[in-house]
Image (cartoon, rainbow, N blue to C red):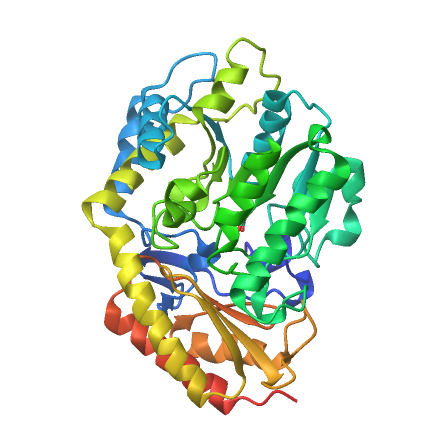
Length: 437
Ligand SMILES: Cc1ncc(COP(=O)(O)O)c(C=O)c1O
């Protein structure tokens, strides 16, 4: 008899502790297991099922493409690839740019850095990242990230990566007294770091503009200031939009909240690009970056880059976001979620901070004491009561996600408003019942 628990090596967990039900189906914001138990998905699984489970138009597009043509390499053209590139350039306003397709988020970031180094003529240029960032789990992306779970596995300097303190206003590493001050000091620190190495030696700054796995949502002023710092020094800015794009933060791409003042030179995508129906990532290049590559050999590519099934799913996914008004919907529901979370925070002493809510992405940070802001467990440990929170949520039919001392709320953009409010009510009840010794 087959057994996932016995035979499969699972990511991001202790194998002996893995014990999850088998998911057999899903629709919209719900999925269900082999025993027929239904769960409201409050994290879009890995913040990727943005369109909901089994979106009929995306499933249909994959089926049609599979019947027509499953595969063709990058040496040949493929219609869905060209169509998806055109749509992405259009939605992002990167007119005259180009799109490089990848298999997911990590390789999109790794390729973005390769491309930035080539385009800037700094083949061994440094990459500036930040603390508590996550860009993927390949060796290079572990080096570009600063993630407590993996930072002991890699020496960033070997990958020409350097990190700056995070714009984490609730615990500002610069000791700032306000969001604006924290944003300003964190952005200036990036500028100073480029200055120390010399702008000629730095190829790119790689940052998440809004939502990130490690739960930091930078203060509003941060991204435009960062853009200013990088532009002034002639260093390319790469926006890792793997999690934050496609409505998650209330815009097609999170940087768009800042208008042209937030436009990066390169942006990376995955997750919501196909709503996770099939794996696909992308690196979107500005016209300027693309033009610098026009007459040079691009020494990279993976067999399945730009796979037609993924690209067909992407075209259908973008159409669905548009047809169903999901970007706008996420902005409205996200605002409602933020307002409700602020109320919940008043009543639940363990909630130290609530951030996000530009779209359907919010972070609830749990502390032992609001005055000292001591986390319920040292980062990135998960407090036993938070494990109980996850179990009780499941028993009540809601799948929540936690990261360290954070509850990450990122439901599919199609979630019903009443379901969303019920789940937040359940979260409040569970967090109130639990203790944090
Ligand atoms: C911001 C960000 N970048 C990159 C990645 C890596 O993407 P993937 O898991 O598709 O390699 C993730 C995944 O969670 C992410 O959240």
